[in-house]
Amino acid sequence: MTFNLKNKLINGDSLEELRKIPDASFDLVFADPPYNLQLKNPLTRPDRSKVSAVNEKWDQFESFKKYDDFTYSWLSECKRVLKKDGAIWVIGSYHNIFRVGTAIQNLGFWILNDVIWNKKNPMPNFRGTRFTNAHETLIWASKSEKSKYTFNYQSLKCLNDDLQMRSNWDLPICNGAERLKKNGKKIHSTQKPEPLLHRILLATSNKNDLVLDPFLGSGTTAAVAKKLGRNYYGIEKEKRYFKAAEQRLKNTQPFEDDHLDTLKNNKSKPRIPFGSLVELGIIKPGTTIFDNKRTINAKIMADGSIKYAQTEGSIHKVAASILGAESCNGWTYWHCKIGSSIVPIDSLRQKFLNKIHL
Image (tube, rainbow, N blue to C red; front, side):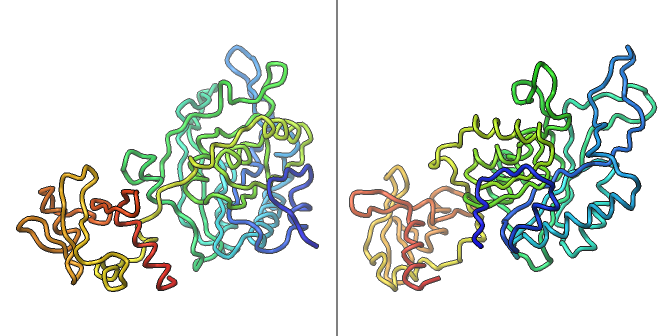
């Protein structure tokens, strides 16, 4: 039987639906399982008004053992349906995340990071008996220790003003126009904010990847996946959440395809000597290359070196000398003319790769 899993929302029990899915189907899983908050009584503010909290049946378990059994079951299924180089994200609070983390390790996933989501606008502790719960914890793990998981390092660095992205993320909780409501009331009490899923999907998936959310809730994962050109598959048991997610997806517009390309990691590009391009005749000795303003011109020599005025050397060394810098990426500094187009010489690297079938 052929399964079409792309861009589907399923109204059903997570475990039952997961068991229907073929092995190795998904590139990424994002899971926001029940937290097992163990709330015995309704939460109230000092003025005795009720707090919109999770006190519904789907978050209630008879014991820690029942919760652990449930956790191992759905995590085992998620591991089975992940591709060998896939990864999983699980979000939780202090009520459940340590139990979930233990299960993740016991099942053979390989934990890559734990990430702290610092909520910029958390709900206060109304009783004044504990610290305000101002964060949630996310665990990011690959399917196995040997998985070649996706991590778009350069994109995350760009997102963070050219600084390495750290594992503590300051993001607001979901509110305003993004919050789904019906008759003025929240549809889902724990709706996750789109910026959180935007960062996760941008960091650890690629365009056209297939992303699973086994506890879809209000549909944030699917909505962000659709915007970012990822395919989604969401499972939600509660009918009212499913209907809200379905409508949300109908109203969600994807970004233009031309705007979905992201920066590639430097390590993904093979180290290729510029001289190899000369050897293969991709660029010929005597060719003039120049900077992007076409004010600096240099000539290519037969050995792959270049000459500008009295300076000779590699494409990197000569560019650095011109800029008065310690180093410079000559692949992006120098340009050449191909037909009627002016392109960075870096574009010639792909011609080299095609010739040697890398």
